[in-house]
Amino acid sequence: MIQENTETKGLSVKQLTCERGYRELFNDLSFELSPGEILHIKGENGTG
Image (cartoon, rainbow, N blue to C red; front, side):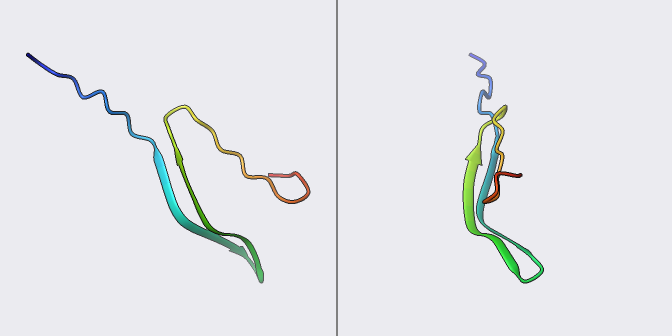
């Protein structure tokens, strides 16, 4: 019997930090996305 590998890889991010100049935009951000999923990160004023 032949078995196909049906495991689909996605994206995994752990402990991501982003700074711009003196400002910390986010710290210790972790998430996982499956294929086809979309992540939109918005700021305090609603922009991305």
